[in-house]
View 1 (cartoon, rainbow, N blue to C red):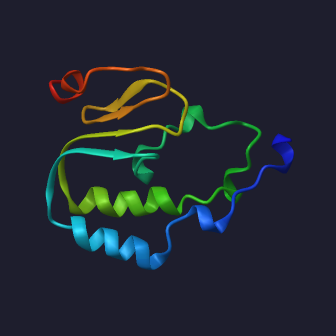
View 2: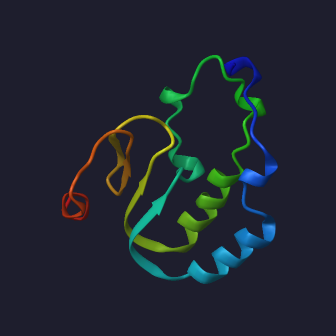
Length: 108
């Protein structure tokens, strides 16, 4: 059924919810950010499925997280969604199957 896959608008945060969240975190510092997906600039394009038309994929959440990324301070950010286990950069860790101790993330 992959050819008939769809998402529903109710799966996304509303503009109001995004605004409320942004206002709560803007200009703040965090040790750790946990999210389902990542900021837009960190997307692992090498993991994108070749049969998915990316022009039809809603990346509003990634763009929202990009705004968050540009307006907070943080030590580490962990996320999933892309089905791989790796460090995306020196402060961003992608998870799929790995289970690690939190201090191993924070100490890197």
